[in-house]
Length: 298
Image (tube, rainbow, N blue to C red; front, side, top):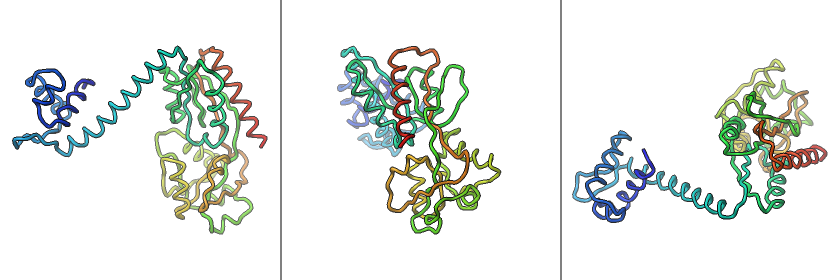
């Protein structure tokens, strides 16, 4: 399937008339009809109901139209942004980050990068550490901020800070009144693990900490997002562990209890291409380390 097939389909789906769609696309009607048949054959579904005089979209056609419009709109934005960047002469510097790091020093880092260089445009992408590794190797980002250690010869990593983990419990729970909780106490409670996918991820790091301490987890639910996990905690489904910086999520229905368990920490890790010797990357790493050190002193 090529991009032109999506453009052709969208014209026909919006006009619901092959003749008008062909005029709009400045092409003849027969080849456009053939393109629509070929698209349906490739997808293995019928996009148009041709049983009546006027064309109608099937349910599959409506779905395909909605999502293809989102796709081409995103592509149009990408093309426009690329042109603006090329015309401005700026350098593009991509930053990938896992969502939980937004409660730490990362917002300060992004702010400094965007304000400090007029000739650099900073692009942001939310992605897991493993996705960051592939994006670095593909050249889609220049630095990643994640939470798990990986082994890849093309990617260098450095731990810039280590956060203690705290236990998120429902407000009103007897556990919320405790001065601290132990790994044994947490392992005895229903546990909400996140993210559910993709793996490996922070979820594997947390489960590994309990295994190393000789405890199993009673996982009752796996959530994809930190916010979802906290919502399930608030609903009383179980407990979860979050990096200490996540306490900045001031929820009235969730309490955070210190965890008395040596080694139960979550690192914040910078990843970059091993052969990237750019001065801007070096400056970014220096700023990130300074900001992270300041956060650890708080």
